[in-house]
Length: 355
Image (cartoon, rainbow, N blue to C red; front, top):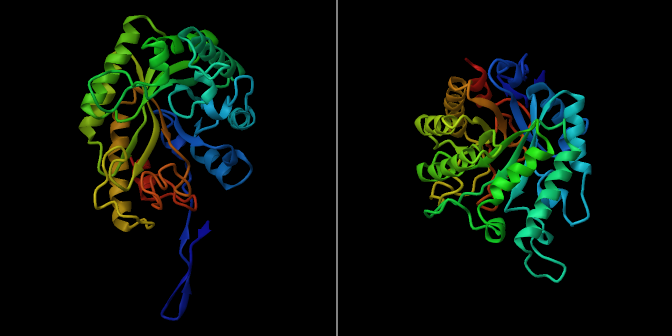
């Protein structure tokens, strides 16, 4: 039992108490899909965060530790410590582990795209480096990671083109995506391989992502699923938009996972901010109610599509820390998760497990 700050009433000291739920999210959803959480290496050290992970989740994703920049900062140097700590924790407590991410235009080390003289590398050299990286990382965690986000965010938000004009695209061409999946499948044939992206409920971007993955399927590229990142807000998406995304990708015979779920209490982060997004540090009752209602709707849709959705992962553990803090507005605190800054369930938690 956790005691909240006491208050005085009619001269008596009253204590507000909270009894933790008997079951975790993973238990409520055991007949539906794994419930995951993005973690950093500090969270798997003995302490409240590790206990919360073990109590609530049966899947984990390294938030940053397996991205190319952090894990492979120099051509002949790997930083395995943080990723190993997360993988070891998952193994010890029999928690499923997702790998994130093998090929992404962000958090990519400079050396990848330049040769020893500082010039841009050739297509052949970049492909060789990409293959080596995938072999090394997937090889180290083979048998410990059941699914990988192989390629991340390769589709632009605007314009008519399907492919983001990244360095991978510029140097290799559009087939860098197919090559990444082929290398990944060769490195670990048992791993489930996902294409992962955000804004998948935007009709125009959804169609571009659909065309990309359909091309891969038509060519026989070993892709198993699509990750809908789920960086949403209390203002979007609608149930209809979400269902359209799930059913559209499922129509290709692909698995669907919600890979990076959080519900911001502000407007959509990828669009221009409105006046309502003034700097705030308070989680108001109105925000709490709206967020709980939105989480309720999202999970109603997820449960409806339990035969298609094979995992739902929250993009961090509690409101104590989120990548949305200070983004996109410096100094602004967000409150996007089901657990508050003290690791206690919020109203959204109640709505997610009440079915």
